[in-house]
Amino acid sequence: MPAPVYKVLVEAALEAAKGEGRFLGTGDDLRDGFIHLSAGHQVEDTLAKHFAGQEDLLLVALDPDRLGAGLKWEPSRGGDLFPHLYGAMPLDAILSANPLPLDDDEQHILPEGFLPEGVAG
Image (cartoon, rainbow, N blue to C red; front, top):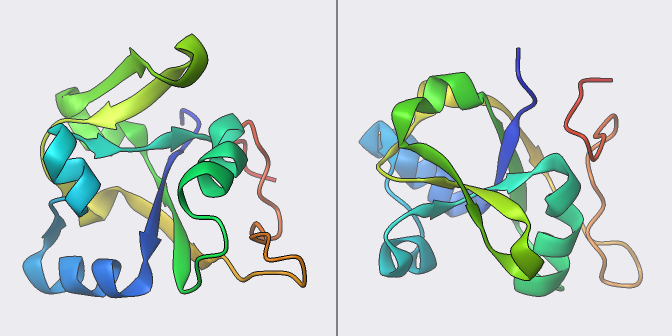
């Protein structure tokens, strides 16, 4: 299985998606025309840049094979290739959804066993 890709979501957004049977994206995703995802090595920077200090977040791991042809790797921050999903995110692509609590310094605590390369531990 290829390394997972990740979506950072507020818990309420995932619950709403479960009611819809798919995830259509956040406001930023809808504005940009694709669902923003991250590779394992990009998760910490994504959290720091876009979600600093935010509570009630989940780190959703996704099976890239189940995302289909809509998954594209495109240059973004600093020329790094980021996964972008064009179209709805099917819920059967979810491998796990783990809370991202904050530590005393307001930094997100990644789930136990998370490896930046996205390799299962």
